[in-house]
Amino acid sequence: MLTPAEAEKLIGERLACLPIESLPLAQCAGAVLRENIYAERDQPPFDRVAMDGVALQSEAVKAGHRRYRIQAVQAAGDPALTLASRTACIEVMTGAILPVDCDAVVPVEQIVSRDGEIELGADVQVERWQNVHRRGSDSRQGALLLSTGTRLTAPEVAIAASAGMARVRVSSQPMVVVISTGNELIEPGEPILPHQVRRSNVYAIVSALRRQGFQRVADDHVRDDAEVLRARLKFHLDTHDVLILSGGVSMGRFDLVPSVLKELGVEVVFHKVAQRPGKPLWFGVAPSGAAVFALPGNPVSTLVCLARYVVPALFASMGQTLRPPEKIALSAPVNVGAATALFMPVRVDIDDWGRAWAVPCPTNGSGDFVALAGTDGFVELPPGPNVYPKGFVTRLYRW
Image (cartoon, rainbow, N blue to C red; front, side, top):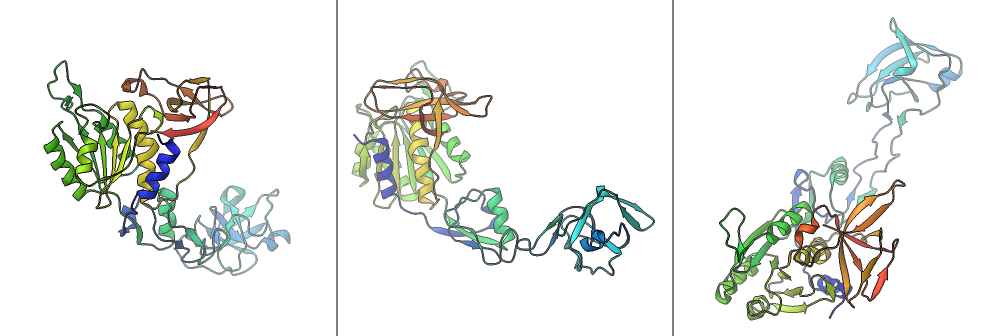
């Protein structure tokens, strides 16, 4: 069987890159940038007042002048005024352009104002360019601000706006459908018999995808009937970029997914990975280029396979520059008996020194989804047999 790293590599090699679309900036939160963005002009574009107060000449203060006539008020957004004399000052607001012939700002807390004049306290020192955000000190016109492959969160959207980008080129979001299979699955809210179970995996998958910013997500449920399954899967392969199936990929009589996908021309890239839980993971690619992830039906297996393989693959198909997985240390020893990788659910705790620890939260098997409540994700531990001690550093994958 493949190792998790080998499975991840094969997925990355076979995923098609999604097309580019131009979107208004207000609609780009969470999107992946597919163009470089350069500075429209210097940032700040002028010597910017950094505090409310008065602007004046620092040399006048050093020459002994402590009292100044308030010449005018320089508000943010107004053209720059010009200082009339060394014994004058201009009241300024945060964000305003620094008046001409001024080179320092004294905060309002350090002055006494009366009868149209201000006086500096005896202990107030004034240095050149104090409380002034100098032009071009953040970036220069034409500088690269954001690179293709960057995911646009709040700071990046603000940077794009500052560069004058009303629209940006980003990756199209994938059209994803999440499909559950099985006669035993009953929707929440519907009457249920003792031998049936609730349809919960799909809700977990859809929630996880939406939390990651994926919006074009549909879901479907198909009973264990080969003809019905064939028709529904053909429809979804023709209309979606990614299919995520839950269940039907093991070795049972009614595990029909692999055979039906083969009939529909979907090339199997791999089936089974040397890991616990989630060994039966199946991945293939349709002639249309649609990617198919068939996840094991047990809830814990479903969620670890989704976080370990599917979500990173979706971001990669959007052209995102992926960061290395988060690293964390175990808070207690973990015994790995089998010669397969172990995905151990954990809770992340912060100690009194600010250090993060992965607290193992073992489940009662891959069907024990209740044990996942309150966990933050899982760590990937190498194959055994081995005991990994407290302090062992490994990869953390968050839900």
